[in-house]
Amino acid sequence: MWEGNHTVTADQVEWVPSTIAIPGNIHRRYPDGSEVILEFTNAGVIKVRIDDGRWEQIDELVIPEQRNHRAAPERIRKLREAMDGNWMEEDKILGAFREYLGEVDFSKEIALNGLYTVLDNEGFAYAGYDTTLYKVGDDGEASADAKIKIERKLDLRKAVPPELADSVTRFLGVNLTYDGYIVVALPGLIAVLSRDFEQVYTAPITGEAVDNGIAIDPEGGIYVVTDKYMRKMVWTGSSLSMDPADGAWKEPYAYKKDKPGLWLSRGSGATPTLMGYGEDADRLVLIPDAGDPVKLLAYWRDKIPDDAKQLPGRDSKRLAGEIAVGFPVDTTIEWSFQVYGSGVMALASDFPDPITTDGDRSLLTTLVTMGYTRKAPRGAENFSWDAQSNTLKRDWLYDDRTVTWTMTPVSTANNATYLNTLQGGEWIIVGVDWDTGEKVAEIKLPPSYIFNALGGFHMPMPDGDIFVSGMFGPVRIKAKK
Image (cartoon, rainbow, N blue to C red; front, side, top):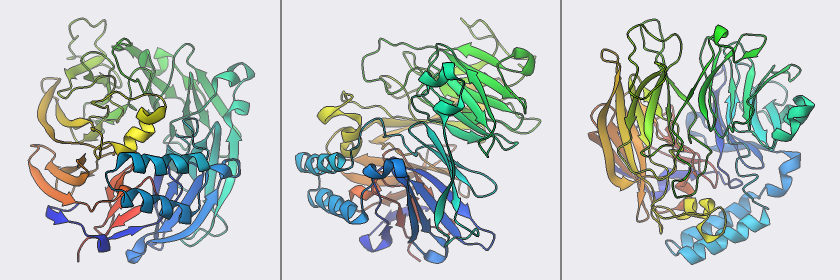
């Protein structure tokens, strides 16, 4: 990512309009060096070629069952013109936005379609729509210019035992085990599938809700947080085990349900994040709890070390460390922690003003207006794990400006993380040193709603440009050469 101060101008911005979405994204590089981005929307997937400075849509695959949620590029351009043309005029912006949502029959039931995605080593991508898992790939010979086709699909309601089918109302997380099986997280259920969808293994979690994704380690550990426990399951290669004899465990955590505010997740709001690889590293899994105050929790992933300390008020030594988050959190932290080396960053995600499940104060309308005409979350805090003392330490807190619902990358080349800040309609990507919090970059973006990622990403591209998984379609911010 860029260092120093930059002001991006309109001629540096390229855009491919697509159906509005909270998109899942995949970057694929082919053996000949060509590269594409697959952006999954609420209605399907678009393929954009990005190598050699290109920014060209190759194909769009519309999921047949989701076609009524798809909008033509011309309609998205019209929506952008209406919103950008009424800059910071909330009533007019939301009027145009609501008109569009009605046309594509948008609802909270389809909001998470295509959100979680994964690419396997054969070039096939997997994503979920309603309760169906889709496997998509190139049509014919693998090529950056090939069209996309649906390779397979499986309605998970029909794949699980009949007594579990009623619990499969949606699914969120999708990931891959190191031996090549797909893992999906469903409400009250974790399932492992072969990539041909012929074998299905299930592990019901009776009476527990799963509202987040899943993390996987090289030894078959599957980490999932429910509304009651932080859990480690174990994929043995032939079964999904919750037996401690196989290395599985579960630990309760704080969940203060009576805190005021709109809870977007049941229990912890974030997917578990792993820290520590290699023989000498402390191997941890981290989540935020849902207590008051909200705390960062670090658990020993495997065997509890002999020198582990039992924290006050805890029943076991599984919890390796905990520390309260330094910025205000009314309900939950929805963003997974960002881990780099022994450091871990928490990013604010809830709102100073109340939001509701629908209407003018709904989550979706708030995501479109926050940082512009409504207040946005404030706070990004970095901690680090001290392997000598087995404690979490507070490193720095950024709260100069409010932040967007956008994940933040770590630029390993210059040891910095890049925060997407948005306040008073001014979008500034602020780069800060990962260890000290010292500012190393300030990248000001021009006034446009296309940079709003609705929870997606701003990421560095291989050639130095910046990729935005925008809600109106992918955006490329070109570096000045």
